[in-house]
Image (cartoon, rainbow, N blue to C red):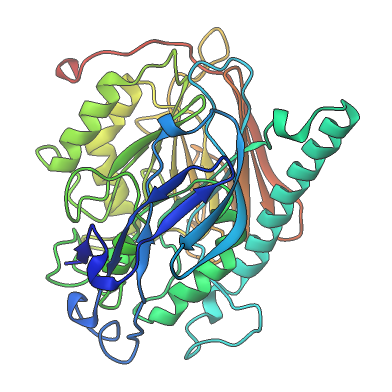
Length: 439
């Protein structure tokens, strides 16, 4: 369990965020100790105190939509850090808004100075290249926007920077029980995470450990059992301890973020949450519906062993539980990872590609594997690529998304800067779909 004191008085620290409009928001402080972790090396040789973890919530109602804010973080009594900048979310039903996203999974980290902790970072070295490419991509878009404003002779305060979002679906730092790696990871991604919403799902390397309550009982977290992840990445989870599923919306996009590391079968708490959310999605407000989790629902992989955690076994269980539901509620895509590759299916249902609707919109979801952001690539592809996959690439890289209310474009880029896949979708333009009782 996490130590928490909402007043932060026991830590002698009151975390604050100060915006450039003079607004100040106070938060809370948490930490965890080695005794909160589940096993070695996380609570033995890999233990490093996380220090104090500060969280400040700023309600959307306190922000002007689509405004770029400068801000400082820290404590007025102990010192502030900054300035940083972020752009607030667009208003609902903004017809002209464009949202840019980075979509990744299975990243890890590699220190800028090349030093690695007990060789633990060796398999994730490409993550540094990918991180620098995303930072460069973001900065180029901001510079382009600034040049446009100057050309139009706009006051810089009258127009925001581009809207950006970073979605990372599982296997975050690959700390695997070595606490120093979490520190190095956040240092690597700070130029992005300090400027845009950084939204994550939990993966096997954050959560899984025997007798700790996960679905598989493996050792992939090396004793962390989700504690550092839950403390360091406070997503808008409102379901209770160790229930890391949640929902968020940003511009024209509705995201349902699940956990494949917890029970997801019919009758589970998570299943009820998924049904409840899909029932009430308003596609007029958010025409795009994307479901994110870590382990794939469709996967090109030869890992089909008898255990409860094989790629194909879990994919089959996910399809048995959710494929008809996702089809009925007109989910556009799933974004996943786990397999260290980039993969994209056709619009697929029950293992068969389906033709688009007459208006060119999807008639079934597309499933995208985004696990090529840094961890060592998986070479266990099937001898013959399954017919429902349109793209399968064993290359490191990241995926960029541009979404408006009228179009969504995804482009996956490798570490050489070359495009390995690109496709464009049109929204289905539906309202809220059928109730779960009709499934």
